[in-house]
Image (tube, helix red, strand yellow):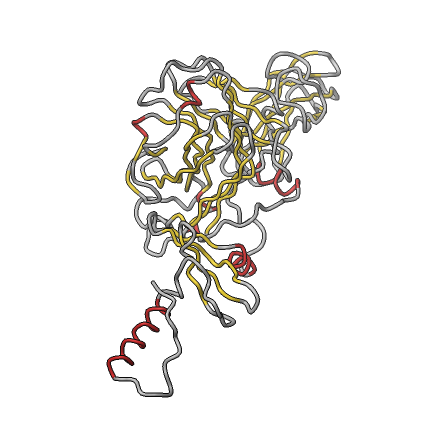
Length: 438
């Protein structure tokens, strides 16, 4: 590393050995990009400078008036991070729209719960806001709840919040708490995982926690994992985290069909069973954290962990979060879950007639076919709800009576729900949900 003169003598008498030494010095300077803790004294436009005053070192280029940050090279972790100017130049050539493979990354859509709090049972993963699963395992923690809340960093309106009730006395080897999203294989087929040439991947998100320390962001499929860490520096403060250039996995089995192709885990706690010292490298096994994982959150009563603005994308550098129109984001979610209840109403028995499926019976037996509008991932599971009573039947509003409901043929495009016991001309209503989640 040096900043030797790069202009060789052209006048005077110089011995062959001296000329060789000056040439080698100049080549050393060029090879190491004028590396040093201070900028070269008389730079020329387009000249590079490896700034060793930073950790990791930073490569800069002189634009004629100032030094522009291109990237840092972290030799300890073998990772490069792009500067804003370089990232912007790359992003100009990136495909526009739907580059984010995470659905509902801003946590706006919560069809099943509409903001209601969910109490998690230990080792029983549950869908919270659309597409996001919360899971915890603990013999000691009294309870954990998950809920969409109107608390978010600037530019966002909602986040997914996990809250620990009574903290555990300690964290066992198999204890854990994480938020995850499985991504459909059709949406990550172009990552090329499982073969030579698999593309690098980058992850970015906003996080807020009442507990500071080291946490984990993990890509995996249940049998293979790439664990990366992030640090929360300030309690109860929104912080943006970026993990760039996660290598693509060239081995393993990675579905590219309608099954889960890749899963992102944001891990708030994980016992030693799930920990690894190998970071930013693909390995066999179900790993969720590093050996430096902070697990205080599970042992602290009332501790909270919030997440929003999540983006998973191919490429060496994370780009800004994509702001989708609500209708676009909503329809992405409806591929996996939809309901007849109006927005703002969580599915439940006896929740009102607004939005209910209608059928005017032609005879005692009747039925309706419903097109989902957005093709679902697979033939969904249909759950029916009575709009005006605490059962799962049709409501004959003309006769103020309930009629037996039967779910018939169901496909990714439509479902059929029949009824019996009504009378010709009577109006019958029913709600349903269609669930094709991963």
